[in-house]
Amino acid sequence: MLEAVFHGHMTFVVTASAITAASAVVAFLLARARSDRPALIAVWVASAVGAVCLTMWSTGGTGGVGRCVVNLSLFEPFHEVQGRLNLAMFVPLGFLGALVTRRMVPAAAAGVILSAGIETIQGAFPVLGRACDTSDLVANSSGAVIGAIAGWLVVRIGSGKRPPMALGSRVTVVAPVVVAVLLGTTWATSIVPTTVAATSAIGPASPGQEAAAREAVARAFGDYYPIKKVQFTSLDGRIGTVTAFLSAGMLDVSWPDRTSITADLVASDSGPESGYPVQGVAGPAASDRDAVDIATAYARQRFPSDLPGSQVTVEPVGDNASLGWLVSRRRYRDNVLMPMRLDVQVDRAGRISQLSAVDVADPAELPTVTVSKDIAGRTALNLVPSCQKVEVGDLLAVRHEGAWRTVWRTVVTCADTSEVINVDAHSGTVESRQTFRAPPNRSPRPAAPGGAQQ
Image 1 (cartoon, one colour):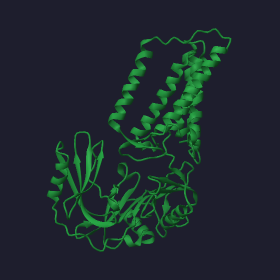
Image 2 (cartoon, one colour):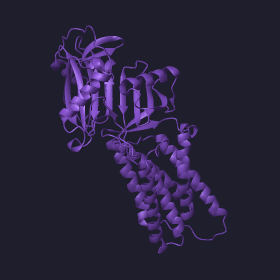
Image 3 (cartoon, helix red, strand yellow):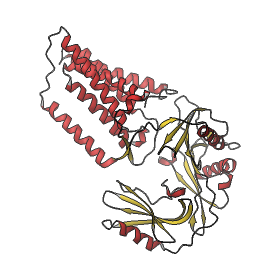
């Protein structure tokens, strides 16, 4: 969470320092008339505000469904450098809280509640670009508890005779209950938890994986971006994602098939444009037509096989296309959507800011379509009889267990869940089925090759 956050972000350093200092001054002035320890209170508040600034500073994200990783390995954070940094960040908060209140439990509880609030906000608002992970909650809370115990011991062995802070007011009793209700409601309505056995499957890439990442970066951007680091995120020990961290963003390539490439070129506070400039094309992009021309030139240079026979759609990104336009290419054959995908986001400067490409050749043959769209919808709805709404998307060519099939992708929407069901368009059997807590907020999207959801 803290690694590489500050590089090229002096605006953050200055802003966070100013906010933290201002909070300390305000806390001191307010506490001076009500407490005999205003300086301690000011430093305590500053430590809390500093932690919030470190964890809530937006790195630039997108909208969508809020998600949070629920790590079942409770002790994993303490074996990772990042987890130990998170723990250390909250030790001062617990320590100072114990010195201020001269109580251990309230000081520790304040740190735990603050960490829970931070992770909840990160999960509920993906636009912040921060990742919600219970490993962070465990590490942060542990730091607050350790700090609170240390502070309480200092109070106990110290020579001071000042009494503990009075905590019997109605606000003190009601506030934690209100916060707990708010956090619980947010989790129930706005966050989809993803349970994993451990997240330490993220590690250094093998030589083969590093070569795949370098090949993908070269294909997408030539030698324009230096590669700073390459790592591998494993899903089951074999399948996963290779990530190349670039000088201005990152690129992911699927492993071991290497068919999917996604890139996000994050803007920097340092000033220079971070997007990829298309060779021979001068910006800026003032309209969707300009964006299509730039994306087409990019495809011709980097993904020429995606051009023949593909259909183009363009959508604005942000209010009044403030973030540019998303230019998408899809190819159909006999009304079946082929596996090829190419999505290119062109920013206002005329540069490529995001990329998503699935590089899979069209299947030579596909099974005959014998199941109609209506029958596929009824088949899907019969699997979830308690639901009333079904949407059937395009016919898709997907690869399942090594063989190409044609499927109808359907979305069955219920009161608080939804199911994505692929119905084989030849046999009428259910090819795959996925359940989600929240109904999708848009029409069914094509599945990636192999039947995986995009």
